Image (cartoon, rainbow, N blue to C red; front, side, top):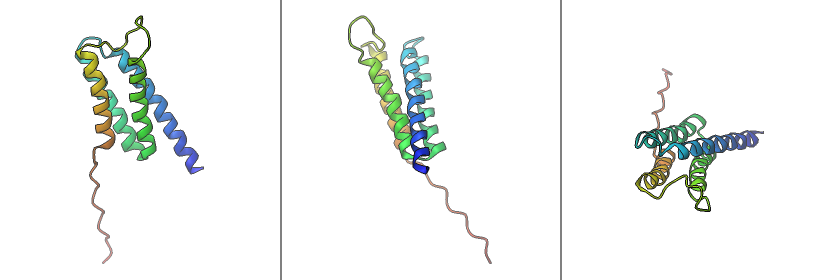
Length: 121
């Protein structure tokens, strides 16, 4: 049962992160550079929030994969008719920024709190 719950949490993190990544990818080019910066902050908050709240490496990896996967799928759409991520500086900054922010939020070391001293005499 425990592994089923962990798998469910990871699946939920993957789906939510994919939706957030897709919405932020569509919105990153609006009102430059504010939506790009806001999107990167939201992505960082999502991945770091999953990491801190759930404390499961599988859920953190699923959130990271969801954001990066949705961004790359939308960036690499076939055909010339639909362009979600343009080949300009803003699009390049978005693609590189998402990967850097996700890796930073997922892999940055979090200091552990020192253990409380026992109060036995």
